[in-house]
Image (cartoon, rainbow, N blue to C red; front, side):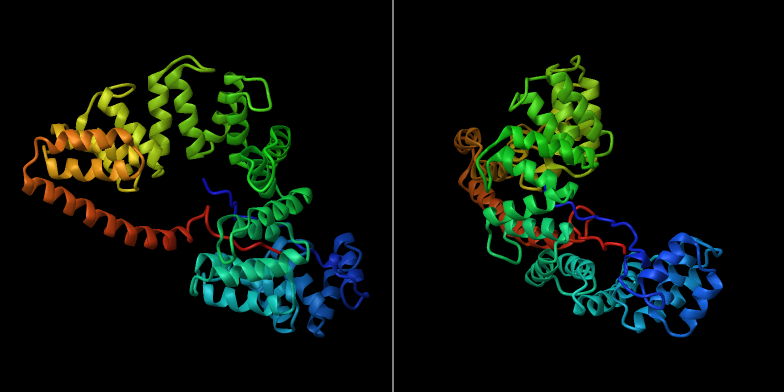
Length: 431
């Protein structure tokens, strides 16, 4: 499960945040906030070339504050402020182009405007540009450049950047892996109230990574992250209550926490909830409910859920027994290198259940499962070889070798694609 939660939307930066005189930022911003200055006066200052007023006018047209909303006028004044060198306006333009809001989506323009603001050391723009390098949006994927920009923004105290840099150190993306540094950065961001970092910090305390294992601290930070709306934090809390780590064991409470995240689409929580229904822990045993939640997670492409759903179809638990459906879901999980699914699929090919009987295919999947640490597959492979011809064994070896080569290439391509998926991309932070 990815610990990085990339999609972060900051509150609008009002002109009132500018420390300037009336004809520049602060007083002008206060006037807009207090509605003490007529919009026509604000517009007059904007027309005279005051970049702060231009930005304020754009914001007024965007929000309908004191003037009817008008997207075209918002963009016109925002562009003027950006061309005048106002970093906040440049960052906002980058955000609009990246998201395709009010303009056609254009990653090149987004990167250009983020870059102009980043050159002025504007931390939010540095963070946003880093996200584009990390996701490879409109540019070459560059983890090192992303990490450098995250570091620049993090040094200025931007909590989302500290969290993203922490994740880079945790996974060794663009920097040398350093879990101690990851822990430090997560802690900095968490103390600022960044929910994603609070979850990441809780997970490090829970697993004893980068710090000593500390269940009370894990509970504290998971709880704060959950209050901040991080679904993974509900999953973390559920694991604690299910196992009794640092809290009294309470399967019913674990089920409730898993359900909250599962209902919002978190695949890992759906799998955990299904497991409780299968075992009748904290809930009444119900194979139909188990199959429902496993099915939802499998539909998201989670290999553990795909394997579980294949198993349920094979056994006819919660669903009508269907060997073809079993093979279908096991194949999807096996193709993602899930070792348990590979063993299960090998069994189907060995016995011709839902698939044509094929010892070469069975050999391949047992071999891959054994390489993945499933010791039972080693025994299954040895037994299978006793009934295979030399030609069939060579066929199985070739199939396994070909799959490994193909998987390595697919995995590399998938990593590049996943960088563009919602859970992987550092979405632009709106000013």
